[in-house]
Image 1 (cartoon, rainbow, N blue to C red):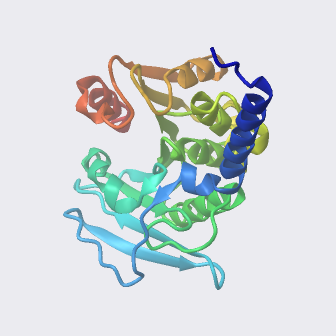
Image 2: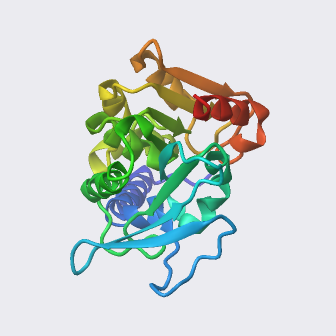
Length: 269
């Protein structure tokens, strides 16, 4: 029987571990985010009434967002929608009718490098850009007519904005405790909390939000585990709530009547 060379096995494993760690550290943007860029001249073909808005900030940074008009007879307010970590506005526009039919205008932003937005992505910039969208909304609507909504990656951004600006309600779909909590589930062998350039600590921000908070999460979420919302639950105010969708996964919550009925109920307030 051939004797195992434990020394060689150890060093081979260590080298593989270190290479993997270096890849995670230096290539994490490519691992964490999956944007689809669009030409600046691209024209959106959404069925909903909308307006394409471009906000140049610097020579490198330009915010691209779409203003979806309310389809009700009266515009009751505005929803600031912060989407997930893939593609661009085009992928998430299918959710717009759930809000516009209740008389809400929707402002949906693309992050740096997503869609027609330009610039280098960073956590600081995500917060700065969300504030720019809020400033755009507050010119037309009072704070008590502004709903801040985040989906997946966008939940940390939405929570941070709601912690520093007044709003009618904060709504988070499939929220995470923080970014390291999501990544460590897939890479438990690495100290991801010290390796990631992104923290997005939803658990800190949510405690500073004065407006009512509603969380939506499916028990079978394979991307952001339901346990994240369970960890956030003790941090909520008495008026806040976690809406649990039994069997719901990461991208199909709107297929469940409970999700739509609760959303309709909140937007009707």
